[in-house]
Image (cartoon, rainbow, N blue to C red; front, side):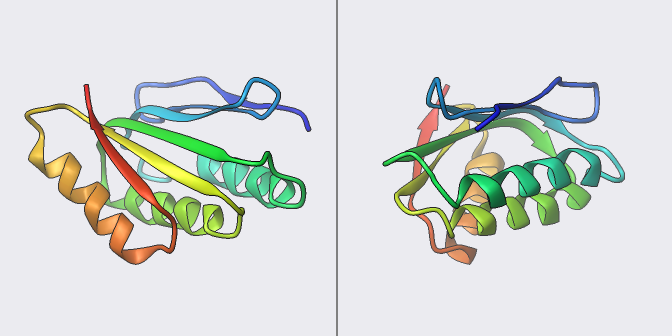
Length: 120
């Protein structure tokens, strides 16, 4: 399957989903008023990937900040991951950013996918 690579902008995160290299990562800031351009591509890619996923899919999410519009798009993305067998999210947050950790914990409560929390 072809990798999905979306470059980071001042308002959207970078996305790199490359099953050949076993890299699945969303990183940066997600503050666009309409984040659907990025996340629609992610959802379409995940739908195809779910048909023949790797034995284990570890998705790293390392966002500095996200706005309300992005939270819905993130929830949709995490929900799509719940259809991929043996998928797991690694939610990165700054050590001193309790809000970002709590956001990850809230997402964890809303979806049926394992989470691991790590600081950076």
